[in-house]
Amino acid sequence: GTGGDGGADAGTDTGTDDGCTQPGATPQCADGWCRIEPGCFELGSPLSEPCRGAYSETQVQVTLTRPFEMQPHEVPQSEWEVAGFVNPSTDVAPDKPVMFVNWYEAMAYANALSEERGLEPCYALDGCIGIIGSGCPEGYELCFEETFPDDYVCDYDPHLYASWYECPGYRLPTEAEWEYAARAGTSGGTYNGTSTLLQCEQRHEIWMHVHSLAVRPSVPRFALRPQRLGPIPPAPRPQ
Image (cartoon, rainbow, N blue to C red):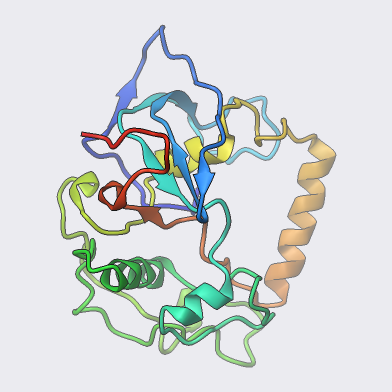
């Protein structure tokens, strides 16, 4: 998937566990953030599932050992602008997701949230080059990184903490965290059930149409609130 930080860390265990049972989702949301309890689930998808990635969705059991809080929606343009960044979206509207933002720009947004609340940032971005919010140049039929003359990029690993869970500020979710959250206690292709082959074909046609209009993926459902800001009541503060 493209929604989060790839890889595993100290709070993620992978392997085979016959006792792996995915817990059901219990709504614990307040002030725009949802608390997600830890648990075991199967990352990826079976070979029989429509829409699956041919080479990127091999199933593996994953145990998340720590709770986390995540926004329930993609980052709207209004919040991106409040953070002090230029809005690169072409379909401009305050409540619509910000568009044409890459992984490093998402890190910059997470750092901005940390700095606003007096927390240490999770990413070292001083050595990155380009312009945050530069967007897709006009006149391009397709919008890829190599066509961005001012694309904001880092040629090094910007993570400040070897264990990403130890960062006291806001960060991107891991691959396992965002899939676990998106499944919402289910095991199908989506939280609302598994798609049919026809639905997959329709989504593929929409994807092709969108990308033919030079629309780059928007910022994902990504910012994780640091637990030391306080859990959502009545959940206990993790130790």
